Image (tube, rainbow, N blue to C red; front, side, top):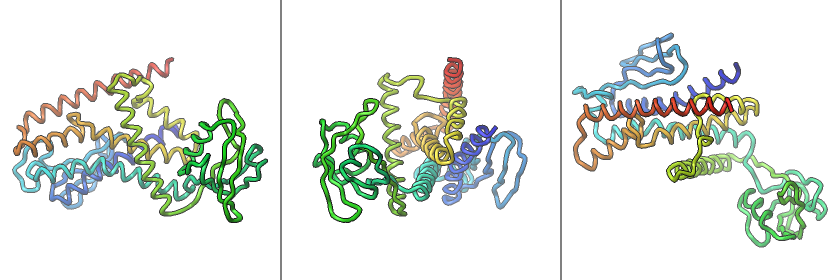
Length: 331
């Protein structure tokens, strides 16, 4: 039950931010929003303020921002279809951008609360470093004369080293000192017996959150590269059932992982929505780009048919991915 509740909260939080992005840019550009809804199906709560109906609907999966002239042409001045191409572009792209902003906020919050990974050593366990005299509070500067920028650089440098490694540290007591260590090997991994520390810093938390966002963008690029070159596998994708299983795992892992997963999932939704597939935000953006290049819009009826075909395609993909989820569970 807790897993299901967490899934509903996570999914609806992400959808809310996405649709709110469309909503605020629509209002900013003078587009009438008929309804801003969270959930699907019949309304269980509804309130009208100004020209907009705000509703909470029975099925807590999804949401929408219903704009004047979004799906069919409308001659009204406050219609989406009557706005300039750049105004429509800004309204559509605002949804995915809000997903990225949510991810940034969540990553920043985690980093500000738990601290940012640091090269300062928090603990020295039994091993080469302790025997040599390295202590907690020392900061690693170089490994084998190579400047270390982050902990992953340190891990890689030690792993690629020969039998001995030279470590330059900034001592907690002041000054610098070099140590020659012989890494120990456990389960095929070279270790020197130091534990990574974390530092709390407002600017550092934001900077690290940005680096996490960029790193995830890179992982998505790698995923799509593998997918389109035939190197991907069914294990790389997850449908609704797979997501529920992931939420169950992160729920058991604790609050930190739940928040981290929410940020990652928000990034995922933002990127997927930018794919140039009809019915998705990316597909609509593609039509606007074509309009800007041609100097005139495509026929609204034809565009509507293409988006409908895209919607059918996405539903078929969803069914297929759900089938893969079921297969994984059975296996």
